[in-house]
Image (spheres, rainbow, N blue to C red):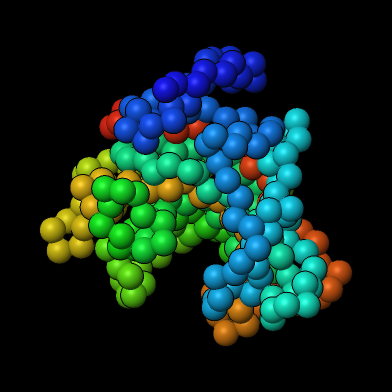
Length: 264
């Protein structure tokens, strides 16, 4: 079954397939001006635990004509130790090789992470996946939004072999929208900013990148406060009850396959 919707802002017809196998061959564009419940869902009413210092609540994600916002704020619920809440957007289905792009404006606040990433794991497993942790990241560390961090894990449930790389920017990402992209292919992962290649890793037999043969991946975006025990990474979160900060996202696009419009 195929659902078609017209996106005036994108100027093209967006095609959303309800079968994950159809989705793998279909381009998707979403301006993120409203929640498309057939494609996305919100994490709601639970927490990840360490190293997160916030829990997920669906009400932390809002949509408007300007796009999507994910807000982190102080909102104790009296039932757990997480006094701050934030939001996480997830695709229902899992996707393979192609280009994943979004425009975003991350949060400049020490100890806060703003992200856009691809993920699978023991609790996020497609029917044909191996159930192991595979992930490809774009993250902004709130203590310095003149830097973007990229990363990936391959079949790594212990999070033992990460591949962090800092990309130094010639702008403050929190001040305006820029377009960030992940191009995932069998032979390499490439990261882009505003259509320009900024970092690349090749698949190697001794250090492989995630493979569609092992698992397709969810598309995700979230904002979270970090535990003080990892303050050397993104800065120390202040825990100020007056804290209310938001990351902004718009114009998501997925282009399947090995080709896309991004420049190498």
